[in-house]
Length: 76
Length: 363
Image 1 (cartoon, each protein chain N blue to C red):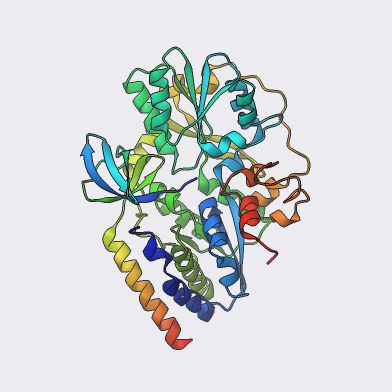
Image 2 (image 1 turned 90 degrees about the vertical axis):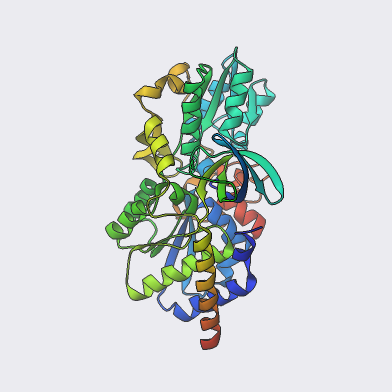
């Protein structure tokens, strides 16, 4: 039930925003992430944005995992 | 979809599995607290992909599953009060209480409506000013701020027909209760990602310290879970016990301050009853004195008879990690997703449902 899905914010009106989730647009509340801006990816849980996705962190994680995976293959 | 498909990469997953196999030497039992993690682990065959040194057990992190029969009976009693509309997340309506489920109450004439968000519940209250709208406040720390937000909104808009049956639960006290009981020996915890988005990493750091157990916060895609397991194994092999975040795109150390503020504004910690575990101090949330007029338990006269459990159902033991669904005599025969006896079969995140759909086995 703690599911949250990444969505990109397309427009903001006060504490309400329109966000796109996998091609589908829906209204969400950004009350819990008031600092969210148009173009941010946010995690949406039951109609509320609960976090702004750290895009840099996501890239760094993927880079680190690719490195881990290639090292494991070399030694395996 | 961005931030999902990359974390489902087969190549990446295979590489991390190879890394786990290379690192893992000591036998270890890992528990995933969260029902969302249980689903990912089963759906992607992660249990089978791990080396024999690692055993996985599922924990109590399914909000529908841990809701006690007493609380379900209260929701059903509320639904029978004339003029009341019950609003709830979907899974709850099929959970059998002592005598019936909300779905059966609805068939008997109660007005029970499934909503996706508390925003929908507020809208129903606005459209039905002459009725009383009660939202069933289940869920962990991920969901509690959204319920708090709806209560603040009701106050600001002068909505006096919106109420919440406050059944929210807190995750760290439940993990502590399981570790305190000593029923299952655990060597690492896969900590819930979106709960930690709200509460941050400190509560898990305290558990790592107090119980000398590695705690790693995980996201929900298969690569996230495998990364988390790899980090746990690394700590286990080194004899370390600290909190780490394997989901840095979704979790910050400090959590979400705006969400924590609104929770604190509306709620206060209270003892809560967990199915299978019993009552745990300060493991639930009740409305504090400033918001008591929105508390359904105070606003309505709810009377229930003594609640009872189905005698054959072992959901409680499954939630504690002491038994698995295959140990249950009802599993797959009289208890199926179409006709569930216990909540662990009702909820898509329940262990019984995961075993039923994805074919769990004895480790």
